[in-house]
Length: 134
Image (cartoon, rainbow, N blue to C red; front, side):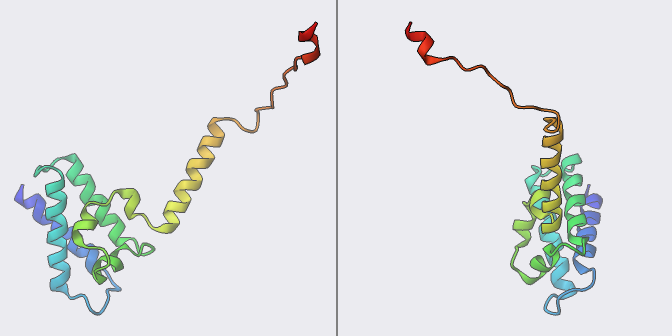
């Protein structure tokens, strides 16, 4: 199990060290951050290495490596702490462009499932209030 945790920390460190890295973040700092992130993810999974732990590591690595996502820069600059990052969901880590795209896709899917194109307004015959008085 220690081997899996070491490999997870290595993957996180590689994701943090991908270029272009800010000049103020050293390799030692990135290594330290990666270990802290891994420890927090491990603790969040009740100190167990399970599918949820592995999926969380994969998700964090993917989002840190995404060149369109400013997440890595925020972590390395200190605006997002390693602890905060470790507790972020996939949705929280997504780039702004991906969030917008996902929301548009979700709305389109809802509209398609409700068949807005084929639904016509219902016409109801309205009762004449004068007829009730007779």
